[in-house]
Image (cartoon, rainbow, N blue to C red):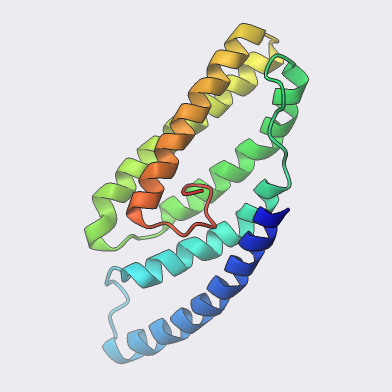
Length: 165
């Protein structure tokens, strides 16, 4: 409950920053005439925060499985989580990153692809149902998610994002 409240507060604050950043960007582009320039880190992270502000609260509403040996407890939340995480990742991946972050963002996207593969594998095993495979796949997902989260935090993704929390 506290996490949701904190995310909501961060999202509101970042929303104001996004609006201010968007106005500033519009002014700068109007005077520079060059919309092909890579965004600054501040502009990029404001856009990322806006995307995460949409998906974060939805993901917060989905309780993780309490027992990975019960296939239904795994499959039900994953059917809801997978499309949200994929959409969030796709939207962040579609953003043009600042030049100095491009390589690190590509590495993060590769890690997120591994997270998605592990989620899909976990769901497939749960739907089979194959309890041992479900447990192994879920543990792999947890490991991959920690790696992606750590990489996102090192890049500087806002804490509201699933990639850094």
